[in-house]
Structure formats: structure tokens, C-alpha cells
Image (cartoon, rainbow, N blue to C red; front, side, top):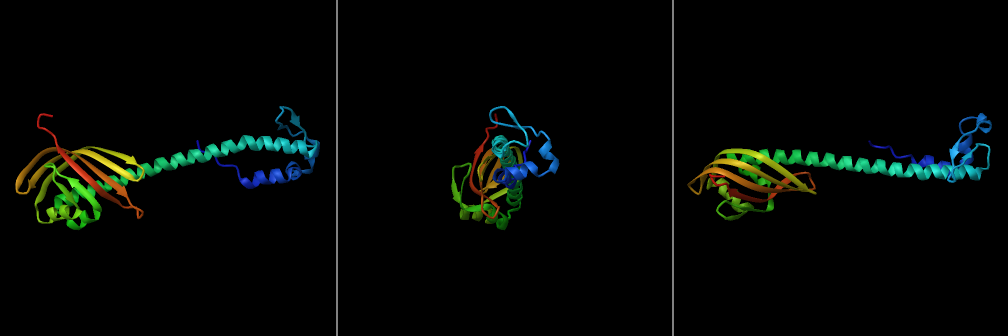
Length: 210
């Protein structure tokens, strides 16, 4: 439940002019018994001294301010959860773009997906920066003809997304047959313009017996 914060103007008006607050509804208020809680547990009539009304109003204010604060806290938590859901959807979209670009050998799209400080570790332990990775895709040193991804998990740490998954791959790597199941970890970082870019990548072959 999200509580709407009490308007500050209302509280200020009540504190600055308690007499006006007590008489605001109608002239008959003077003759009615308006029960307002006091800090000492007694009740106050509208016709009593303005200091008593001020004490009662202060009591109400002290009661309502924590509720308003709780409402703002609930709204903050709700907003945080919405951001996480949005971030995960954005990363899922980036993952689909990466897979499509890898299969098609699409260098321009891969260039947009990889961060300038990208580093990737291949199954053979080879370390590639962004330029080297794009070159491998461009000269067809790495060709992926089949890439079926499953068991995808996304972990968010602030504006960093860590993706792990299982991939069944067929293709060639430096002219050698590439086939089997692989586990990979890909790290994304969200930039001020709202884009997600891959900063790190590592892949491990899953033994056939696993």
C-alpha cells in the first residue's frame, strides 16, 4: 500500500493559525464538541483555549508525518523494483541482438554492443579486446552457424548486469570444428544514454558427460 504524503501547506497552516483551522468549517463549530486527541490523553472542545488546540494539532501532526514518510519509502521501493524489471528486459533485448549479430557475422551491430574497454576470454583461454574480437568476426576466424541459448540468468548490481547461460554451438574457430555445450558469463554496463554494452565475456566448455 502506497500512502499519499500529507500536504505540507495544510500542516503549516494548522500550526501557524490554529484558530482559523478550528473555525474553518462553519460558525456552528463554536457550539459543537470537536474531539481532538491531546498528548495527555484528554479531549479538547473547539471553544477551549487556542493553546490546547495547538497542542492537539501538534499531536496529530506527529502522528501523520511518520505515515507520510512510510508512503514515500513504499513509493521508492516500488520504483526500484520497476527499474530492475526494465533493466532486465533491456538486457534480454541486448542478448538477442548479440546472438543475431554473432550468427550473421554482423560487425556494425557487434561494434555497438561491445564497450570500448571490452575484454573476452575464449574457450582456449585466449584474451581478446574489442578490436581483436571484431576482427575475428570480420575475417571469419570465428563462425557460428548454430547458437541455441537456454538457462539464462540475469543478476543486477546497480547499473551492471551479469548474464550466465547455457549455449549449444556449432561452427568453426580458426578453421577447427566448434561443437558442443558451453557455459558463458557476459557482463553488461548501463551507460548514461540508456544503452547497455558488453564489458566482459568468458566461456567454458561443458564436458560431454555432464
